[in-house]
Figure: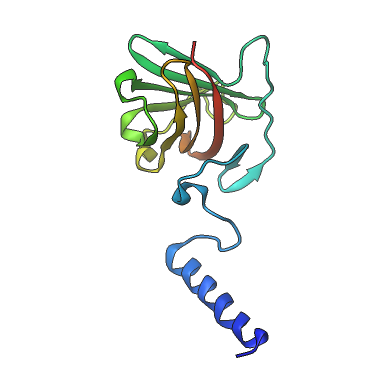
Length: 168
């Protein structure tokens, strides 16, 4: 087979795979690969929007990570949609690996997309993931990412965000 004939089956296979799985063949899925993205992506009702997550934001570290009452907490502030707050992962569970949304809670606070300013991932817990690529309990250094869908009064907010820093 020459190169021209080899290209057609590859494109056809990618297209059929995308149709069967509902994925977009032009985008790589970092979540299925188990590797984190390098930045932040946001979508509102499936439409990508530009995002800025300034560091520092009004004097707050972005992302902010801490231990509170025996649990890990992470806050990520964005100008466009508000502050993402991932909390309630027990410190004893904090290690490298992938965690599903039933191990933590994720909310979006101060969001212009919700009447009361709060959005929840309760409806989409099965779609929420926290991946910890590296964690050193001695230094508090954590590298990883999270991905989730949140319900904001009928609007769906999707986030994929890399995160790294030191947990004080």
